[in-house]
Amino acid sequence: MMDRGTKAQKYVWEGAIPLQIHLHESEVTTLPPPSPALILAPRIGYLPLLVPQIKPFFSSSLPPGVDTVWFEYKGLPLKWYLPTGVLFDILCAKPERPWNLTVHFRGYPGSILTPCESEDNVKWSFINSLKEAAYIINGNCKNIMNMSQSDQVELWNSVVNGNLEAFIRVSSKLKLGIGGDEFSDKLSSLKSPQSATETDNTGLVKTGRIPVRLYVCSIHENFDDLEDAPHIDSWDKISYINRPVDVLGEEKSSTNEDISGAEVGDESRSPSEHGSNTGTAEEVGETLCRQEGSDSLSDKAEIKLLRIQGIKPKLEIPFAWVVNNLINPEHFLHICVYVRVLEPITI
Amino acid sequence: MVSSRADFDILTWDGTVSSSDFRVAALAFAEKWKRFNTTTLPRWSWVPCSKRPWIVAHETEGYLSLENVFLRGSSEEDQDESSQTGKEEPTCSGQDDAIDNAILVQSSGHEIHRYDFHIVYSSSYRVPVLFFRAYCSDGQPLVLDDIEKDLPANSAKVLTESKWTFITQEEHPHLNRPWYTLHPCGTSEWMKLLLVAAASRAKGGMAFEKYLVSWLSVVGQVIGLRIPIEMLCDSDEL
Image (tube, rainbow over all chains, first blue to last red; front, side, top):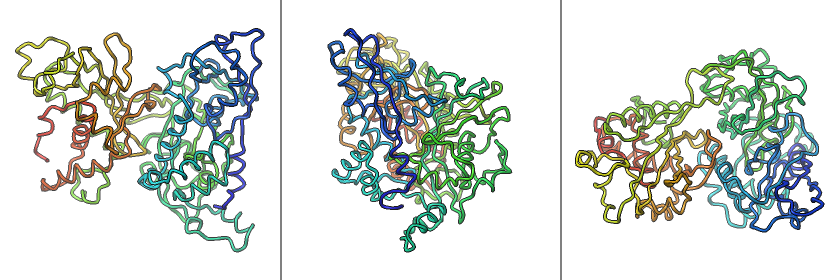
């Protein structure tokens, strides 16, 4: 990994979603009502971190009381601990720009959302996810638990401020490297002939587990135009699968050509219970959609859309590259999938 | 992974279980609980997750659920272990014999609190995780401060001082609602300690059905959920 990050990592860290934020009508006490706030929200950030920027637009209009901020999209309360980019990718099949959200400063839905009273909640949630990722990658969270106070502060600030260099400086001490991939190595060797060869970047993917969070929206209607994708009015319509992907070490990351013969739901592809050869993101998405290698993706289901960091990964991209470049700062790879089910499946 | 195979070496075991081992252990646990609780105590049941309509599943994922565990309001003298039942009914003499086996969540107040417990498998940490929530008699959810008052006196101390057990509020992995949970990051460590000690007394290996009983015997103490003594003393393998 280069000190300043790869080009793709910079692209991801600079990625932002334009938001148009409206104050909920029940909290508007002035006439005329305040104009919506226009904000650029970093993909890798979290909505509550935007509150200091948003509040000035609305503070004169709020009813008296203590602020308990929460966001909502077309009636759906938004889970504040999901990165903004993930929320956008799963809730907007057709990307809406700007993304129209509603902000509330009162009436926190405590029966639906876990509390978020300040930036500390977001920081705790981030560190907690980082610990979980560390456990998945290394089998323990020691490196995170043993972080110095100043490193912790620097790490969190680098996420809040979108500072990739600072982030890499601190996070490289955490030894959360997943392994190199040939693609990145070729790029770095083109740039500098004496490229450093850390043991992580020999083109070998380490055997181990990759932290992945999969968000699957399954729908029955067919849609060819993303605009016609059904609106998600409840989190129950999205299956959240927080399950690491097992990666078997191999000399060469496989590309889609190796697996192009595999049909969706081909059970014989997986050599082990949940392992997958380092195939593509799409293949991994399919592997995860199956359960423990023993079930098949129904032949009545198809993947309509797969997004990582707002990108539809091309089939020939090696999974290792996806992991190294498209993971979020807490070291999870978030994959958003729309699956179309032709008929109800009985289990 | 825990296993009953002869080649299982508990000394190198890392304290974790696989998802399928968990499911087998959970079903065995629920069955055993039923056997040892012939009174009208709530039962653990396996709740399958039907959240993946796009696959043909041969085996579903799920979690163990124990709901509607009631605390009878008690006076301070009732802190004694042998004098409480898990039901709302007033004590009658026929119940007294079953008291030692009763599930119990101790209370120091006079309110009746209702608890729900779920045991969910974590693929990340490869251990079971306890999720719980509590309500008072009018259906209002209890906050953590109130729950901590319900805990056995020692437990509150254990909680605050232990690096291994702390309660947080997180989203239930299957239900999209906030529940309280005992954080899993230390579980594999103390499970290993617990079962290595037990195995050294036994001659053979450790059956994985035992894993959940042992796990709950520790976790249960933290939140005041007691296991019938017979389940722990079922000694053919211990």
